[in-house]
Image 1 (cartoon, rainbow, N blue to C red):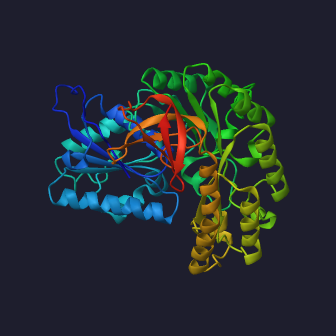
Image 2: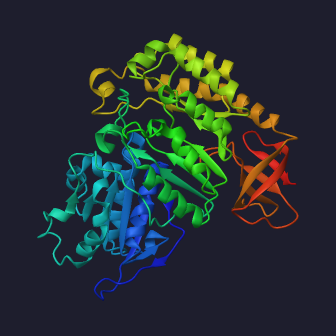
Image 3: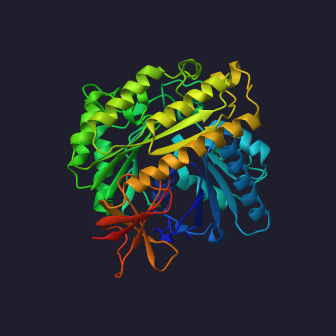
Length: 467
């Protein structure tokens, strides 16, 4: 959950007193970008509060991806409704993926929610806030059109997300290069509420990048549902490699690729990661499984052999590459033999970064509709634990291998320990990967890029001293 470390006063609209607005942002970095877009629109006419408790209206930007995310979103909405009933706030607006996915159902299940805003309607947030605060009789106006603004077709155009009010620290930012997905993985509900794939134009991506760099961003993290498919719907785009070449010359120190679909990593992209000066040797490439029968049931468009060939080529052609991947355990029909293939592959390939998710049976997905959720919960949990236990010493060994080396590090800020400052290496994405604890006799300025000698590790994390 992200709450805002800011308070920004906007201009008043038609002389009216500006409202105090807080946002609680849930979910992934793509949702965080949406939050920043909403904040930018809100701050033009209202006051953005860092603490929702100080607000007149609270917007809950929800995640609707899996059961746990939906449960968290609904729990936060209900908590905000309790605040409203107690008179602590005046209104609750629900936005984001769950709003897009469930729409009217949210207002039916949680009476009193003032408005539900789909992702295509963010430009209307100012009007919605004005209506929420000016409605004299909410019961009489409960069916007003602005109370549920959710487009039926989630495949809305994606344009430049400039004018954002940033929630991330000044020195790094996310750029969403596309939206939606065409990969049709049987476990995934994203196309149901994010729509089919469409690229953001090159001009829009570059405009965002220039704005973010001018505001102090040293690191740009490229995100989407399938980042590697950027440009496939743009004639003569040259693909993601071409976009990276344009971004490489804008002044960012680090460019990072997150959410790369294995089947869309081509030779041009491999060469761009290897050769471009500011693209870090890191790629987040979710594999999800390695058993070919399971990959087929998941709707993945690659086999075990194709996956192995790609990963070996990445390792061979990109020096010092760090690979982050994820696996799903307990997918319908997964046998012990299928799971053992994951264990064997992880032990053999020794991923630097690895995440594991127990399968969540999603309504409205091909797997949810056509496959029985036949792996018991206790077996999913046991497989999750076994895989994480296998990965831990592998990750620790990768950390130990960096001891004695000098690497670039971005200073993040205080660590909670007065003797240590938090930093992050090019091998670590914000918020999800390990950190570098910096020992320094002099204060280190957050947002600066320094050379650091690694002197120790604490398991996943590193300890270093500025050179």
